[in-house]
Image (tube, rainbow, N blue to C red; front, top):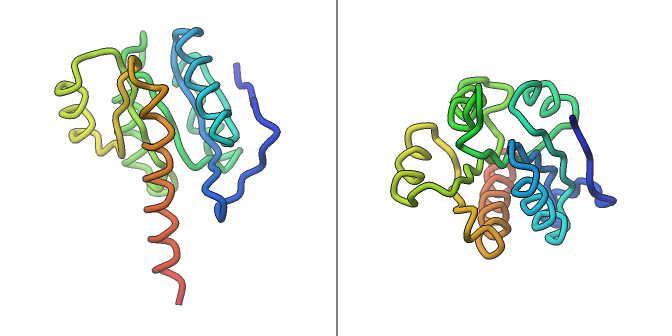
Length: 146
């Protein structure tokens, strides 16, 4: 089920982004959504990756926060799929997991994710991860404009 959880609107100039959070654990998902909303981002959420690409395209999302360990279709598989789609490859992709940090870093390199966040440290690391990638993406867009 898709839910939009913010009264904020997308505003690239202020660094606010539209973020889809995908996590099969409702408590973890709500924590991630809460952190992002506190940071002023517009959030959407799914309990599984099924249907994610349609929502990303329909809502014009900027970022996806993906749990790595989900039944049926893992977050790293979705990240690879997003990176291989030219229409979606611009997305900021953040992998989240409670697994070992070194293992998560290696997985992120394999799937070309932009950042990794340990669920344990999400309160302090999620917003900076999104902000850093958002600023970098805006600067690339700015460089492309004559």
